[in-house]
Image 1 (cartoon, rainbow, N blue to C red):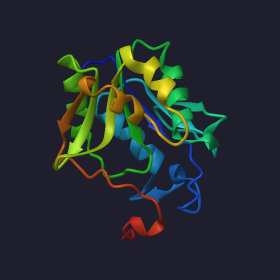
Image 2: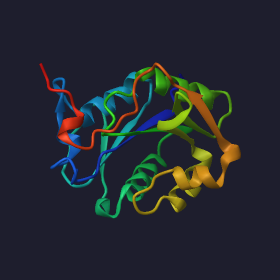
Image 3: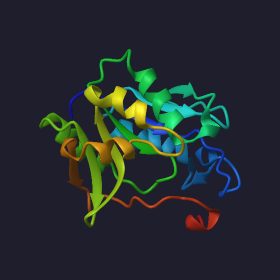
Length: 189
């Protein structure tokens, strides 16, 4: 994987449906935010930026950027993360969500490989359905940021520019399921 692919974890929310910030939720011995940062770094992303908001975070091996507008939705967190990466040498970024602990490292690697082949935007698919993570070439960051408002991230950009989007089959690499409530996590043993 090229060393100029960064990672971005969106972890700013308050977790209102969960009952608290999902970034701090412990699962299999680590917080969801730490798992997400490790997912990206294990997939070769460098640097890894984590966007915090509702709570202050310290994440080993990651740069934490606070989004003061986190309550306005995911769009402001995506903008904050992309803004933080503009000074980096990254040519692309893989964006992951903090509440998807079962996404696999191979999905990150496949997205980066698609970028190495000239793809501007790559989206992980599972059994033909779009999911996360997504990869965004630096060339589209500005336009993605302009369209990321409210509680949406890169989806409006992808819908407006379907010819730039490459689906990347990640079936069998993990699961893109969200953790929305405590019942979504299996009981720890």
